[in-house]
Structures are given as C-alpha cells and as structure tokens.
Length: 549
Image (tube, rainbow, N blue to C red; front, side, top):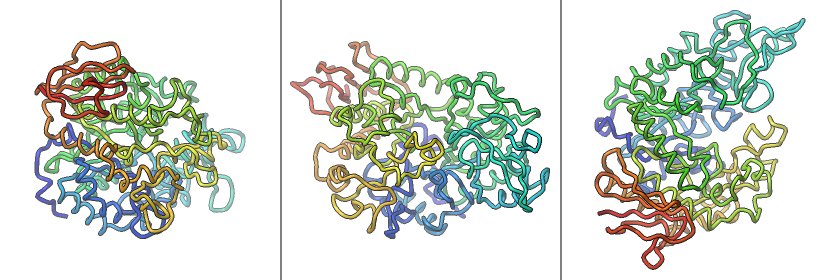
C-alpha cells in the first residue's frame, strides 16, 4: 500500500511524543454488540485530536479467542471479525493520519493462540516434525512421560507445560507456555518463525502503521538445550545480569531485534518500536538502542509511592539510562496491566493492591479526592519531563479502578488460573463512559462486555465537558501547553524543600510539584497552568504548577 504524505516527516517525532493507549474492546462500540471495535476507534478521532495526543497505540485487535484479552493471537495479519476488518483498519489509519496522529500496533511475538494455524498443524504432526519445531514441544519425564519436562511455571498458574493428546487419543508430548495454556510459546531458534514475523512487521508498516509496542520483549529466546534444568529462582528480580537466564533477557534476543531494525529503517520515516521488557534496569538500555528496538518502557513509577524523594530519584536514574542508550525515556503511570494510578495514590502507604482489589471496592481506605488530586499533579509532572509520555485510555477522565466486579463477569485468566485468588486486570479494562446516561454510558447502544459502575456518570466525557475544572480539561490544557513549551531533552533540578520536586527545562519552563500537605511559595515568573487552584498565591499540597520565566 502507498504511504501517505503525512508519513514523511521528522524521524525523531517519537522522542518526546505523547502516546495514548487504546484498549480496543473497551474504547468505543459502534454496533451495539458490547465490544469496542475499529469503527468505534475511528469515530473518536476528533476527541483524541482535541485531547492533543501525538499517537495512539492499539492493544491487540487480531483474531483471538480472548483467553488473555487478545494477547492470544490466532492470525497476526488480520483484524478480529468481531472488531472489524482490514478495510476498516485502513480507514482508521487514514482518519488519524489526516489529523496528524500516528498509530502504533501491538506485536505479540513470544507466543500465539493455540488456534493459530501453525499450532493446529503442530498438534496433528509427529514429534520432531518441522511443524512442531515452530513451537517448543518436549517429551515428559517419568516412566511414561507423565511428568512435565521441568518445573518452569506459567505467569497464570502453577506450570508452564501442558501435555498434548495424540491423534489416536494417547497422551503425547508437552508444550511450553509462559502464560495461559492457550498461548503456546514460539521457538525463536526456528528460522521460519523469524522470517514470518518480519513479514508481519512489513505487512502492518505497509498499511501505514507508524510504530510497534513489543509485548514481553524479553522472553522470546530460550535456552532449550538438554537436560532442561529446573529454575530455582523464577522471580523476575533474580534475573542475572549476564544474559544467561534460560527464559528471560537472553543476549541472543538482540540479534532478532537487529533484524527488525533493518526493516524499520527501510521506511521513511523509520518505524518506531518500544519494548515491554521487565528486566533489571541495567539491561534495559539494550532494548532501547538505535540498533535494536529504539525505546523501552520505564515502568518504575508504576510501583513508586507518592514521594518527592522517590520521584526525583526515579527521574534522575531513567534520564541517565536514556542518555546511555541514545534513546529518550518513557513515562507511564497507568496501562492495561496495572491498577489505575488515581486509585493507587488514594490508598494508604504499603497497600497490597491485589488484596485490596479482592474487596468489594467500596473500602473507606480509598480516599478518592486525594487519589485524583495526586493523579492530576503526577500527570503534569510527567508531561513536563524530557522524553515520551504514554497515557492509558480513561486516565484523562480521572477514572478509578473498578474494584467491585463480581467473579462471574471476570475475563482475566489470572482469576481462574490462580484458584480465584487474584481478580486480575479487568478493573482497569472496563469500557469507557462517553455519556452521563444510557445502558453503557455511551460506550455503545447496548450493554458493555464488563459492567460499568454508577459512578461512571460523573466521570463521563459528557459530564466533564461541562466542568471547567475537570480532569479532561486539565489534560487538554496541559497537552496543548506542552506542545508550545517543548524544548531540548534536558532538565536541571532546582534545590527545593524536602517534599518538592522542582526542575527547569532549557527554555525557562519550570515544573514545581508539591508532594507535601502545606502550600509552598512559587518562584517568580508567569504561572501557565496548575493541577489545583493556588492558595493565596502558593501551590497547595499534592499539586503541580508550570511557570515560565
């Protein structure tokens, strides 16, 4: 497909871009079936244009049985018929490009769906066949192969191995899946797998996709040399720094990404990629190298407490890392895998978030006013930092986690795989409220695939459009002003009180965030925007101000 004129432009546009994550099935439903879809995304191009984002990132929209929210992909080069088709996808790309908004697609290379044509072929094939070599099949241990090859676990349950049944009904080999059994892992030592994913990257790039978010970027390559040893310390925090782990962050995965970079650089401008790599920070720079993916997610603030000291340390550390890699940093407060930050900031210190989500969601421990006030301040701080900021759909409305979803409606595999001990991630994936009323608050003409709480009415787009001090209007103002003030990718911290983070960008753009309770005096200059009203000319607690000098 021919590229639009829009796509020829500044090849460094991504370095300080604001990217808005769209979870397609929960964004906007165009046909009333309860699922968000491609046409629904297209219908909100004006909304996202007015919001002021530079790009959107679509979580998986491929054909899927939804064993893991779409991250079980049955066909990497098509659109799920429940969400639309390729022609509608092309129309969506054109609509966003016409507004100057780029589009990222989610690539899921570690595993496919068990419905993928290759895996179905592998199940019918003999052990040792070419079809089985695309995945990781192994004989079991024990007298009759009745035990898994080793103790490698799954993120969604006790074991990462599932035994197959042969065509004649007898027990067969085992296959590896680091996630749900419906998500068999690819064998990335197989050249056919390597070449097919290159084909997938070209397929979407040729359709106008501007960038890719790489799911589980650290887990593709695995050491499958016999005798397949047990792993004593599976915890991600125990990944060694020498690239020798059997499953994660192996050095040889970089060879794959160097091949991908050649493809990305063959387009004008080069296609962008960002790695979801849960690895020790010392290793993150390799994924963000210009020779590999170019950028990697910095998730450090997802677990950071509301603390000036912690935020400042995290900012300094990640700016150092980005300088080492030659990339720009990424700043994230929420996404489809974590509890929304308006909720995190409203809960007491040292809260066990997974345990809290298991309550009815109405616990008095959640201070909504404090959570939302802090969330607004944190967002402004992030938008003032050098690097790119990734927003998650609904955070511009100040949405909280929907923690009281009943067990019978939950869709996250964590719920069933872990014996109903973890509700999982559905609470941040509830469909968005666009209107104050209606069966699904304007998400669609019918109901939504996850139930929405009554309090969504006061967080709907329609409601917030009418409120001068709404979170939606703060985001719009901040994103508009950010474009005006954007400057070189550096900052200088200004000596401040213990509970204040104050830095200045090269053009005299000051960010002051007050993490404490008492109001603080502001420096001389023009106050351009605040996350909360000033008190006698001072910045109140849990607030951020932007000042230019």
